[in-house]
Length: 313
Image (cartoon, rainbow, N blue to C red; front, side, top):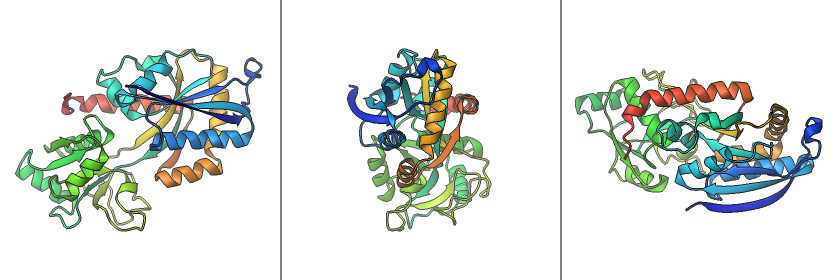
């Protein structure tokens, strides 16, 4: 069942063309429940825009069906420049390309990529697997015997693991759970061998290790895990970034798209958003409408290439 929650926030003045000179309430739709990382970022953006002065905004949580409920609501919204979807690649690439949505890519105008986050292939401290070559060798010796946990089928973690398996030419056994907590417990308890997680979940707040990191999906080593090799360094050609972005209904006028992109660019550089992203362990990675559209198309193409490896249970 979809969840609805609206918070009225005074937001910043929109620098726009005369057609949008009278700012209207901006509706920022988050397709997940309140309190999660997507919600935290959306509210930080709204607060930052507030500090810019003048415009009001509504943060609306439209949760359900792995983010597709909120995405569909924006696809069907009036294209008047007042409704924005903040979403990630799960509803906008993975589930879309798997045919699990009631919307198409053509129903949206990509507005801006906000942030990216890599994944770390990790295992329990003290476990037998310590390097990527060891993982690959063990998987080749016993196809389908090395297991990995994820928070669910067709999650980012699922995609990362299957892209690794495809790149390495190995077969791994997927063990999906209902959420990150149970998946984490299964790996730490030794019931499952591996887990793909964001860098922020590898260490605790004091810097102690929760997991043993094996390899990270960045092009260069991550500053929070300087001793962890990239997949490429470890011999497997894999680079992967989870991402968050903003989308508009497809027919939103170009002048509104330009004005909103300018406003969001200014907000993303602000102190409030910067602090929130640091807490979330995410890196700002802004792309404007044209560049984001190309990135999104390439991301969907990469998903299509591995769909045969993603069971649709």
